[in-house]
Image 1 (cartoon, rainbow, N blue to C red):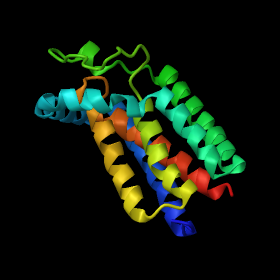
Image 2 (image 1 turned 45 degrees about the vertical axis):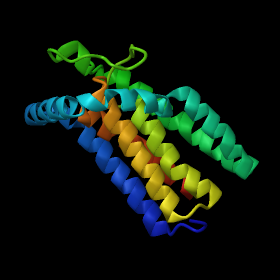
Image 3 (image 1 turned 180 degrees about the vertical axis):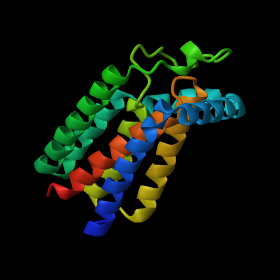
Image 4 (image 1 turned 90 degrees about the horizontal axis):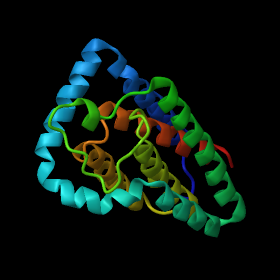
Length: 195
């Protein structure tokens, strides 16, 4: 992935904006109902996987993100700086959306849902900051280090597991995760464009 075609970067950014938009569909009655149905289905089906999702839970958290941003400085000062600045921007956007939207978390409003994370989140649910962070890293790490597409696919697989884990752990609805994923992809695309 030394040289990423501009068309691929455009697809990442466009796809990210589409996912951000899809994340807001919970504001429509039918979107909210489908989101709730999908949450209930996944949360129930993935209940056996809770110990695994608790194990990989730190991969979506801010401390892990800070470590990985530090690692990106090994590719060069400008690359690490670029990754840090862009992450700061998308993290601020995520916070702003959370405080404007104020969506309650599933374990507060869905009957019989347990909050199974090691720590209870105390901020609003939408968008998922954990999904944003892990998807940003899944794309930026291969871009920064010039890693092969197989590594990108592996990191995307890990990002899928971390993202779905947030539903299993009862802390995010599917549309929260989709919106967070979109923010991460937009940030990764901007990182690649800012060369």
